[in-house]
Length: 116
Image (cartoon, rainbow, N blue to C red; front, side, top):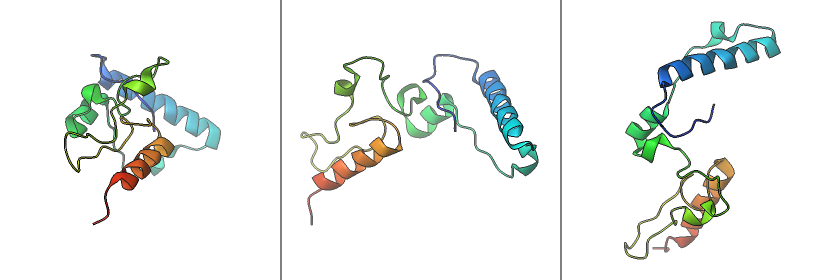
């Protein structure tokens, strides 16, 4: 898996082609084999397809860029007080991106949902 920025009108076809080939070359070199012979199925997601499939702005998996000391404070909250029983989980909400933080996000929401 390769992380990618949100879509800023890059030539994604070319970036995907060259990135995929660079990764395959590195793996082949490390493993001393040709992994292309073993690829049975692949799915390529670009910021364009991610945006289409998930409605994330620009196809950014982790929401707004985290390049400033205030970025954490700009993340979407895990719930809205104005809409009862609406919760948000994932890389673009508090506490942030990456599998451990997405799981932490899910735990926060699980603790917020009232028992029935």
